[in-house]
Image 1: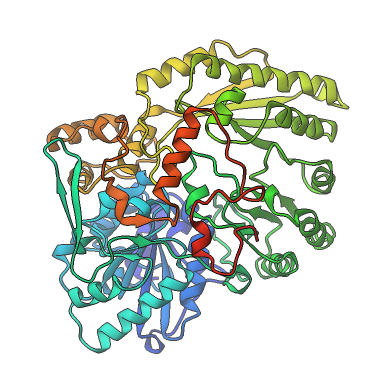
Image 2: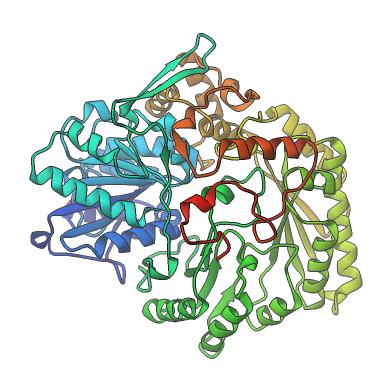
Length: 611
């Protein structure tokens, strides 16, 4: 650690965020590596270190001979101030070296409100913000994560977007960079070559023109550049890298445990869910392999908790066998096993009996909507009886806390649907009274609502978001109809959801808004300590753009969407058909019952989208 850093760390919150040196962190001999990569997460250490994707890519790159990947997180305001005053540039945790001297700087983007932190980190590194201003080959600025399926608001700042799962394509990009450096290519030559690698989207190679009304007229790729870039997936998860030697943080993080990924993808097809479509097709890991990896990760880290991670863990076919295999090790060693992402339609007694062997934390279910009509419209494929039976099973097994997640503002939602949420919560309470073996213990039923956000590459990508005033009205309606002291209600603020909708469906013109907002002080917009809604509205006005144009406007089928150049592998016609079925409140069966012809099977030759 350099002396300047030693001098300032006693003056900042949680100095362990910035020191590195954690157990299992990878430190290499600088003289033995030829390519250095900064893996940047545009949020705090506690958030970034909880991200399994970051841990996987960190291991994949450090397994390459001659490559050293280091972690970089956004410094909190107090640390940023000290760094700027002390002339300390943004640095890699493993070496303390300035990342401006690295070959590749990669950002993991999972949330649109982290975009200003990307700009702030580039500036802290001493680098020009815009790609066109960075003329040399290095550092190459890349970005991946779910947000890059529409990375257009960030397009002028990023050299290359990596679509989909990064394990394979990241290695290919690094090898291309090495070749370019060895042969003294220009940056433009590298970008043109990168555009030929499946899954890599180079935004500067596409010309975007607009109609007078602000909608997109054309998106024209340069000669030889693909018209549409389709995501990459890992074909065989059993052969993919998994961090069995996870870094053990020096300070508490959000998910401070072993995260065992059981499968990728989702069979369900909820019409609002970007992740459910973006991670298709379903690919599962062998349970015996998962048991070995889970045990090894616990032994190599000392963690006393393990969680099974996926979009819908209870849809993993051999889940009971997996739990049995893990519990054989976890129970005698005092390690707890948690299963998030449970479905209300398949929370079984079998599963509950195994969960009773470990700590009884609260259970979480996400009905999403208050009436069956609306659940059918969003294709949730969960009935009221499914939810009641799951709660009955849990309460009879000794659980006394349940969280229920819903969205307000879903397409076709009425006041009857809103009131249905209160009715469901009341029915869950009565199920507890009928089922609990220990009524004196009491019950905690927590209802949470968030504002629906239309996302690209979903059946609802054409929809508009309800206004903040309307969202608040529905919150008030629901709050005034909640009954019982055992039922609490929490709701998400609409301001951040509104901005998320703006940037989720935005185009390149929003880059000016992002840069100006950042120059006006915007950063850490996911944190209430820094978020200023008024600052954003003032910036939109100064830039001459209407945020409602992006968030609230219903888009016609024929409109050319900003994200038309990227593909999750799902056909646009499929999305539109699903939207039409939503307005008819007609469900589409899950992938195990019937192939829906979404197109994901074409990404998975030899597979059947059902592990």
